[in-house]
Image (cartoon, rainbow, N blue to C red):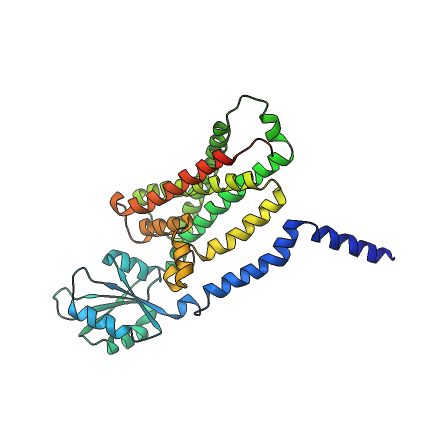
Length: 341
């Protein structure tokens, strides 16, 4: 047998005998294709223009307009809690138009961005009520502002899963954990120290990322919103650090762990509202995505940065969900962690 064939056989067997290589090379692309197919089965989410409706009280004119807009397949209508939130979405280009009742109670107001005047004029002509078109000036970096919470959440996600999972698996492989088992060090102390160390690094990462976005992309930021952003990021990173620890406790091979985390990352990115709202996805996927801590991170970050939400009562639900994720993953880490396999 020639040297070429011998080497070819060796490399093939080397790859096929490695579970992580087989999974990541042969199976993961198929899984990724399936996920992308489900996400985009109804077309790209931005193919349908989103019209945000603001109506604190029952308004006949608004309801007639909503019913009329529902007949157009190219338009997606949604309700917003406050006008500030709706206009925040308009400025961030998450919404193409905002529909609200006129202050005098006569007719409605349709607000659009500077690049959607023609779209707005067409909508006004189609509405079954007296409508006034207002053009709202938006920031030049509006869509970057929309993407920023997703970038922040992804950074925290990667730092949590990779930054904690991979070193722990490596410590197990090089027998460092086995050596620590001979000391009186409690498991909880070891885990807490590692979480605190990694959280400190992520905190610096968040500050640098926010600073760059503020300096170069004019990210809307106040001292209060910055404080909330730090709280949200810290709860998120603890949740993902705990998840990384739990994965390292279940998978003792560092290479396999990296492949598993890489395979987990991609679906999470698509199901966490980093690029488009969950309402645009099939119901099953949107339900799954709504329970992810990364989704809650993105929603909370957008609320404080883009919609001006800073009161605790409005943020309490999302913060509570992140706290539960953090407590759950940290508890699982403590219960499943072993010094050696």
